[in-house]
Length: 146
Image (cartoon, rainbow, N blue to C red; front, side, top):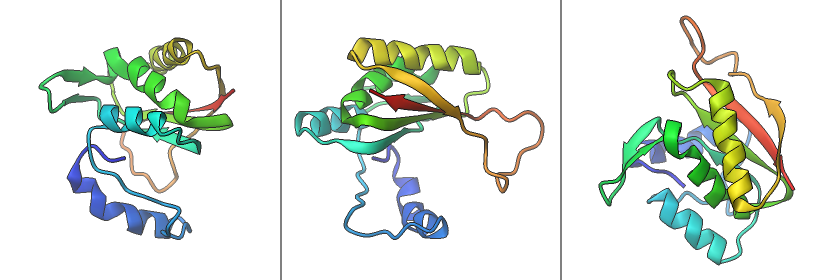
């Protein structure tokens, strides 16, 4: 599920680069993630892993401003029903003004609001080929969901 069209053409190549065949097990959906997360949940869809990597801030089609610093819990809450029991929810942000502790607190609130339990499984480092000058602002928290 992609929020902006500019990333659509990159997905297949990135998967192949990482040794993942782009086949009928994969689908790329463009649209409002809040709408699609709700739709997929109503359909009863379940996944081994759900990746949430939202922009730091955005304005939706209803002109509502969204901010990872204020609203990440809502996104986690909507994604939780889509994760199979024992599956993973990968949460990521590059918001420089959000500490990893505050990011984790927002994620945990989303789990609580969804009535699911998320246990931090790992803090994933940035890949070695990701260029960075100075401190790395990206936070990658991987949660096991029960």
